[in-house]
Image 1 (cartoon, rainbow, N blue to C red):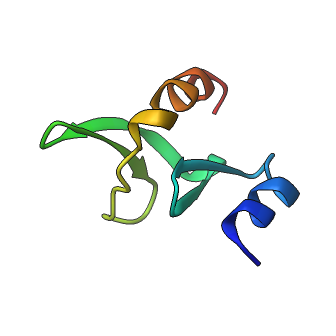
Image 2 (cartoon, rainbow, N blue to C red):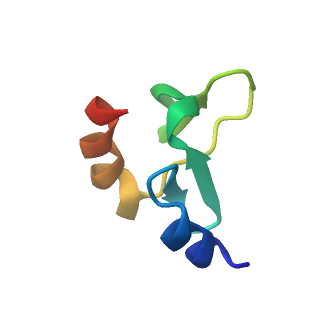
Image 3 (cartoon, one colour):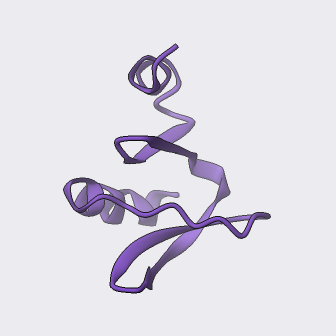
Amino acid sequence: DTLKEIEEEFGDLFVRVHRNALVARDAIEGLSLVDGHLTVSIRGISIKPVVSRRLESKLRQLLPEL
């Protein structure tokens, strides 16, 4: 499956943060700036995916709901 297909099928469980990354909504701890780029902090792992500028406003709107 492509990320688009997964996003369409499980959109209530995942949120797209970049063209090549989906993150489980319930695993998001918050957003932070790293080297001038907005990143997503994920519970339990040290990897912080970069949020694309195109999706930044959408993610900020969703954050209060998460």
